[in-house]
Length: 88
Image 1 (cartoon, rainbow, N blue to C red):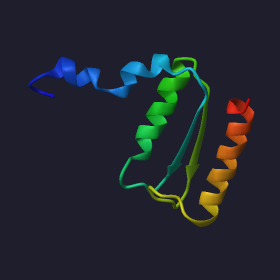
Image 2: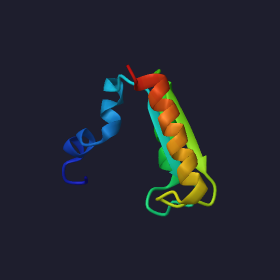
Image 3: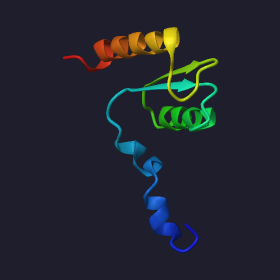
């Protein structure tokens, strides 16, 4: 990034959020060590600020890969989201 900041900035997905044309669902384990919760929170806020619809869910005690009942809950929410927004 220090050697070519302009090209590096172009690689960021944030530059293309304006092109998102569908609803977005985000699931995030609150104990995720691979991707900090703040990243998903920032993504959610950025999308909302651009007028996008975002369903955002966090899962206390869960890490990067959701487990057990929280996995089941996330999948139920995903199916509901699909049926509400994406199914023809």
